[in-house]
Image (cartoon, rainbow over the protein chains, first blue to last red):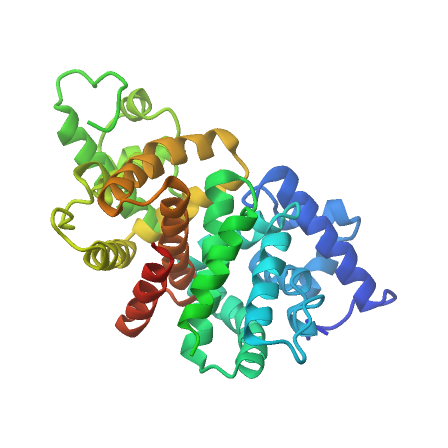
Length: 190
Length: 190
C-alpha cells in the first residue's frame, strides 16, 4: 500500500487511489502540469477536495504516488520480469517500461513537472527521493547486484534521457535509439 | 545575435539582453520557474514589460534565449575548446560545461521548467528545438563527425541525466559520476 495516511471512511483505499490517479493523469494531460491543481483533480475524480488532502498533503505528494503506481515500482516494476533475467534483459525491460509509460497520456508531463517543482523545493525533493526513487533503487540494486551510486546513475540516465527526448520531440524514443541507450547503460555496469 | 525582433530604441541590444537574462535567472532562482512571470522579470530587470515583449513574444522564447546565452551555444559552447580536441576531450568538456552551468543559480530550474512547459506545448517545443538544440547539434555534428540521430541521443543523455540529478538531489553531479557518464557516452560514439 503506497500511502500511510488514514483512509477516507466508507470507501476502499485502493478504489479511491485508482480513481484519483486516473483523474490526476487525465487532468495533467488535458491542462498541463501547472494548471492541474488539487481542486481540478478533485473535480475530475468526483471526490471532495478534503478527501484528496486527507490522503495527500500536497500536489507533489499526490503526483509522486501517482507515478509510483504508474511505474509499478512497489510491484518490482509491474510487468517487467526480473526473476531469473540476465542483466541485459533487466536493463532492456526497464528502459522499455519507462519509454512506454512516459508515452502514456499525462505520465511524462507529471513526471517532468514534479522534477521542476523539486528543483526549487527541498521538501519535495525529499518526498521524490524517498518515496519514488529509493524503492526502485533498492529493487535494482538487488536484481543487478550493483552498488547504490551506480544504480542512481543508471536511474538518472534512463529517466533523464527519456524525459528530455519527450520534452524536445513530444514523442517517445524510437527503437534504434532505445537500443543504443540500452547498450550504453550496460557499458557502465560492471 | 540570438534574436531577430526589432531592438528597443535607444539602448544597445546586447546591453538589454545581458540585463534581462541576468534578471531572468535571478527571478527563476528566487521564485521558481512557474512564479517567474514576464511581469516579475521585467521589474527585476528595471525595464518596461513592453520592452521585454517587443523582443521575446513569450516566456518560453525568453527562457530559450537566456539558456542559449548561458551555455554559449552560438559561440561554439563558449569556454569549451573544440578546435583540435580529441573526441574524448570534446565530450568531457561538454559534460563539464553542462554540469557547471546547471549548477549556476537559476539555470537548472529555467532549463527544466521550459522542458516541462514544452511537453504540453508543441509551439514551444518547436522554439526549443530550432533555437536552442539545433545550433548546438550542428556544432557537435561538425566537431564529432557523427550523424544527426547520434548527436541528438548524446544531447538527450547529457542534458537529461544532469537535469534529473539536479531535480533529485538539488546538487550538481559529483566527479566520479561525471567520469562514468563521460565513459558511457563515448561508448556510443563510433
